[in-house]
Image 1 (tube, helix red, strand yellow):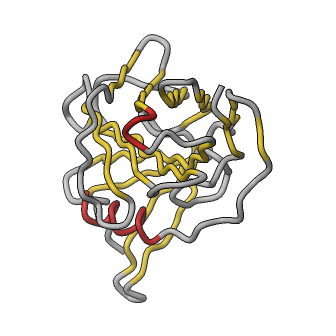
Image 2 (image 1 turned 180 degrees about the horizontal axis):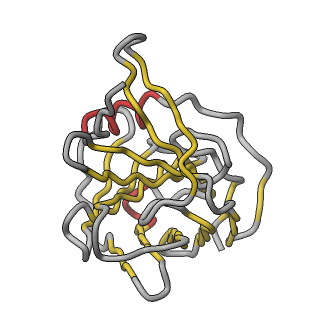
Length: 203
């Protein structure tokens, strides 16, 4: 069995093709989502079945999310993920947040730190993967606090009344023959590309 790296095209396909869960109950302007440690999964391509297999992988560097805080203020939506172990070495990684709202298009916010340890933030349309020009989009990575934060101006996403977030992290580690792709769904111990949170209303 050989592993197949989760490259940008595969990630985009997975994100855009994910099945939407039913809307959850409303909550306040700040929401904390706790996630277990050691619940990272390895995504492995199985050539015999021509499909992806998922293998439990414990806690992986730059992958294992332990907590996510979503804040919805009058001007911006801020998402802060805390990792079990975040270091500017070895495994390049990305943090992906799908967002949906009471009105307007769903979007994907991404912080890419694959070899660029300061990272780069981008915002995309959910339906086509086209990048959205969003003045004021920002991010911050703190390797001491093990956190990655992305801040999205509400004006870039239609000034919604509420937001729901589905978050996952991904890292790729290569050895002599294989690239291993690790993923952590921030809302569950199971594998997947993000579990939808409760609604976070504007503060």
